[in-house]
Image 1 (cartoon, rainbow, N blue to C red):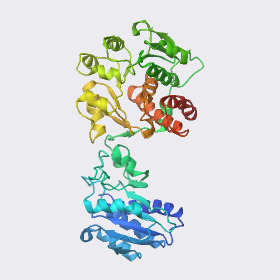
Image 2 (cartoon, helix red, strand yellow):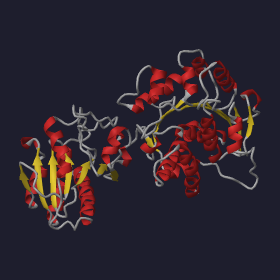
Image 3 (cartoon, rainbow, N blue to C red):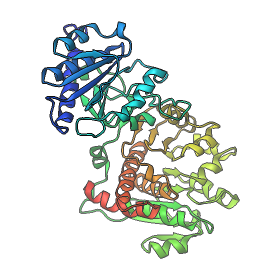
Image 4 (cartoon, rainbow, N blue to C red):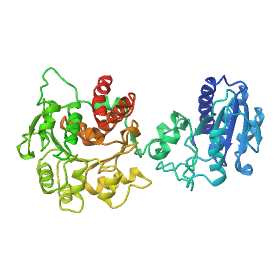
Length: 472
């Protein structure tokens, strides 16, 4: 800001915001004559909304500003709005095509206050000229969301104390609330407007968002000399007589990955071979032969025989994925001590309840910090499963997967994820890249499977192939 004329950054932000609003209004009959409502707080976000409203008013929109703190609204923005023909009112107009949320921005904490929350809740009742619900656009972040964590407080009635936006226009850089936690859902579609901050963003990012280009770049390439062993061999120690399906699903996930061979070790070998005849199956880890990575835990059980298999997996000098029952076996026993002294990489894949068993408490409001704490304690890469899966590394890096979907919250889908992750490790990917790629593709497979109706784990496993085909 010291290198620019006063107000230059706000003008850039407002221009980008107005442009996106104009594009949205074009789909609702055009900017001219559109009814636009500005929800204006006392900070710079309110100023962004006022200046953007002035842009729209000059193009013929009927712009009304509702000032939540009238004596503290951005003075220059308010002057610009009035000069452009906008007006200030003490209640929303009857007809609204577009609402611009400029209540609070990145400095807001603790959720919206009662009056602002009630106003945000009432937005669902606003209708435009065509009778359809008003489009809600958030300025930088949805007001009320905790910007650094994505946490959204709830009212006593269970409503989010935050604005639910259709579109969020972010300035300069994405904020964590736009990609993690409940706030990510409230943000809707996110557009990033470049206001010239990039040369000044010299710090380490709080989060890295996994993109398709990353996954394609990380994926192992095949060459003329490739053969099944050079592509990597993954071992799968999952399932049991009680849960043979876990073995079948985790092997299906491994077969979808880039490795050339899958070795299965466990008591569900009959079911595995029936479903997947290309697999080499044995009854014990000790008899499986050489592998470049192990997957262990899904449906394994928690008895002494299961613990012995887990010990055998951890004794192998190769990367391992620990899922489900393997995580339960680590709790309160000596097996956990084997992790911190282990040289080869470890990836653990807890959901929230498994995280609580490992740590004694739920992840809480800050899922990124929770994943990083567990990663440091276990000296492992942590894939903390959820709608926006977070990946934390022992050295403090964090990644978030944007493709998650609630349809994956069904039995067995985590088994598929674990198998795919193990295949990526066996193919030579670094643990954080393997975890990121597996989460990204698993999310896409869930979305693909959902096109056909209710989703089951076999649907997700089958959907991995068309997803990978599109990835190229």
